[in-house]
Structure formats: C-alpha cells, structure tokens
Image (cartoon, rainbow, N blue to C red; front, side):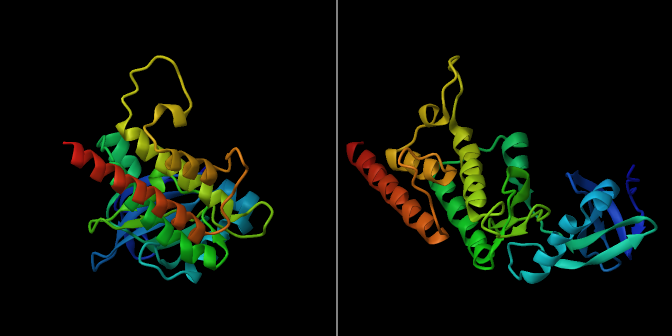
Length: 251
C-alpha cells in the first residue's frame, strides 16, 4: 500500500502543496522550494516498482534525452525511506480534460486544426528520436497561459521497436484526441446511436483524414510519417477555408 504524501510534507527540499492526480504508475503532487519554484513530485507506486521497475525508468531516460518547451524537464530523483520517484518541471495551464469536462469549452474547426498542428509540432521531434508517447489523452495535454500546448506524463513512452511500440499508436491517439474536440459541438439530441463519422459534421476529406489516422480506412491506407499527416491536414484546412469563403459570399 502506498503512503500518500501530505500537504506541507517536505520531499527532497520541496514542500508538497497539493495532489494533482494519480495514474497507473504513480501519484503526482505539486510542490515548491524555498525560492517558490513549482515542480511536480511523481511518487512511483511500490507494486509497480516491484513488478515493472525497468518499464518505469523509461520515463526518466526519455525525458532526460529531450529538450523541448512543450515537454516537462526531468529535474531529479528522490528516495524517502521505501518511497521513491521523480522531480519534474511543472507546466502552468489547464488540461483539455479540465477545459472540456469542467469548463464545457467548445472548439471550432479552426481551433481544432490549430491544436492538431501544435500536437504534430510536439510529436515530430519525439518520432525523429524514435520515441512514441502512447498516451495522448485529454488529461495529458496542457494549454499553457500563452495558449501554446504541452504534452505531459511520459510513463507509457517507449522507444520504437517496429513491433509493439510503433508510431502508428501515436497517430491513433491523435485522432481520438481530435474526436473529443469535435464532439464539443455535437448536440447529442438523437436517441439512435450512430458511428462518429455519421454523428459529426465532417467534410469528406476530414473523415478520410481521421479514419486514416485511426488505421480504419476502407482502402487500408496508413500514415508513415508526421509530414504525410501534415500534408493531409493542410488539405482539410484549405477545404475549410474555401467553404467559409463560399458561405460568406452567400450572405
């Protein structure tokens, strides 16, 4: 059983402020030092340390190898008795989980395309280093105060092995993430349940784009790189702009 840290408890020179959340591998806390620097204390779960110690330390190795403003920096490790974990950079902002589930924020197509572009900007350097995140979900993407995005929680991140850990996993997660944004404009008044591509107001190219990301295209077409995804996303954006101009011309 893991003993949770308490508010104001001191860990490696940092004072715990509050608990941020809990995942499969660890429990995250917000903490500060004497200079008021905010960090994330990630307490690794003991049962996971016993069973999958090697898997847990992929996060450390991967974060140490990355230097990107949208990815938290690895600051250090700590050990308090039988408890151990990481100290990570704290990134200010709100997660998409908070924005959608708590704030009920709605995203336009223009905003969705911009978010997709930003996520691709973050994924590109990862994939260039043969790293896959494998957990691009609403709670793991932050909108910073300057409106730029950040990707957190690298607990499931791995190096590509062309078998289990492949880049297509991140493509699937990207599509699933975008679908959550599309659904913020869906009224959901119908009683008959339909597939997402029938429920959502999508252009043909949008539907093809999302299906290809998910790996469910009728022609079994798949993406092989971020650049290919960008090309098709740009086509979707161009179609959207033409439709907008056409609508304005009719008004």
